[in-house]
Image (cartoon, rainbow, N blue to C red; front, side, top):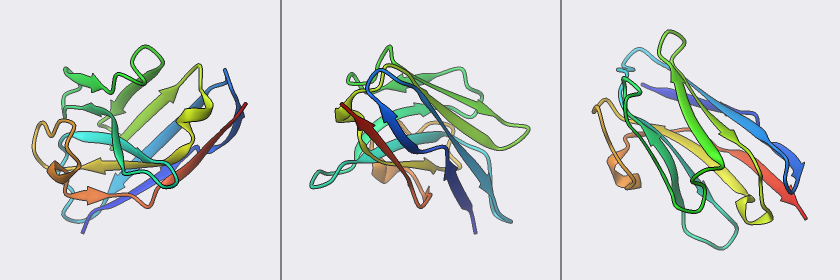
Length: 124
């Protein structure tokens, strides 16, 4: 089993910043690609950012490019999402996901394990 636990969500004013963190653990956990997705009320889950196991490659959704940064610490089995210049439209439940594969990209079906999510609310 693989467990992913997100933290760092909360309420912030527009223009503010939050840092999300996701910790991976489990007897069968095998480090691989990790990603962040989000789901706003009444909308489908959408891709936010992803990173390879080595961290040499990252990809972002156009809506967050230049404002969000994904990073990872393999010694701690964690992946972070630094979110700056937050907008009300960033309000959503944010999920981290992982797969043993080295790269998974933007499609949620490519990820094998998911966290429970953390709420991010940006007020205007």
